[in-house]
Image (tube, rainbow, N blue to C red; front, top):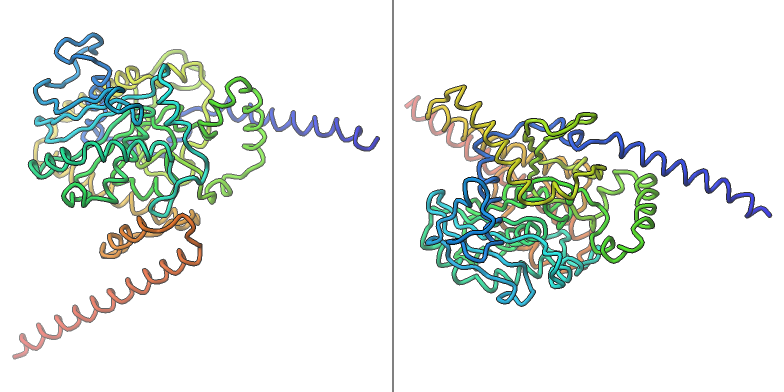
Length: 450
């Protein structure tokens, strides 16, 4: 009898939880997550619409006779196309991709297409994961995406190394959309860790632009690689529920949503941040804001950017345009519209060339400071396996090599021991630096007195 009396109470609690979840979701818009972020500049945003067109070119069978060319074309010269790989070439181990030598922008570009709903091999890559299944460089990553990236790197390692060494002033850019964005992010991570495979390429030459990526790496890695990886937001990076659970539960989706409703209500954000297995969108985030609540149609797009640690797109936005906005063709159009607005403002301001160069240097310095602040913020919030960078830049490279060989069973004691060694190392270098400066000043004073 007592059990039956408790049933109405449980129903009331469940209804209240669902009502709270629905209220927060219905009033939450995409712009709320990025309202405190800074505005992106034309210089830093310029590669995104261009790379979106390169990704669209992967869908063409013959670039000399394109069938779905966007307005203005793909911007690709067929003679500069190094190679293209189809599903037959990859045997389903990775999505199709192209390798393009962009002489106009001094860039070596590997572009990967998005999820093909008609290909079982793409689903196999996407579903090959469980929380905590694969650990690398002190964090967790999506197992299937990492394996696909490893296959691509093994297949194209020789030609990439040849191009990197032949064009030492060119950057190496990995880009992709949706499933391909996750593969591109994993490629950037693996190349940074194993740069010796590509002729010891400098980290500063490696870039990644992940367009609407799936969540593919833990928070500490997402922040640590923000100087290399850039992500463009849509609904997919906001999907906190593991994608493999969504696809496996497609016929019981209401059950999954109800469980997600209860979990979001009962679990605090602090607990989510401290879960080392939880995956996030990688790197620096760019958010194209094109809609406002209670307003029909689109507004002139505004691009905001940041390297957030907490509040990193944790809320799903309820929108009837969620799936259509995920299409690469729509992202390319809105990104190009945003770019045109930025360029138009720059023309109105008539910035001289010298000031433009100074602004680029200032932008690079601000990004570096924001990146280090994000690393420090991750340490402050006690993000698992997060650490602040060394002031002298000498210890980070050593630890990257050590972290890549750590086993998946690394204990928290080992992590704390490493951080203690790092503190002692920095203190030692600082003392030696102060001693050298003091000695140099004393020598200058004695020379002046003599």
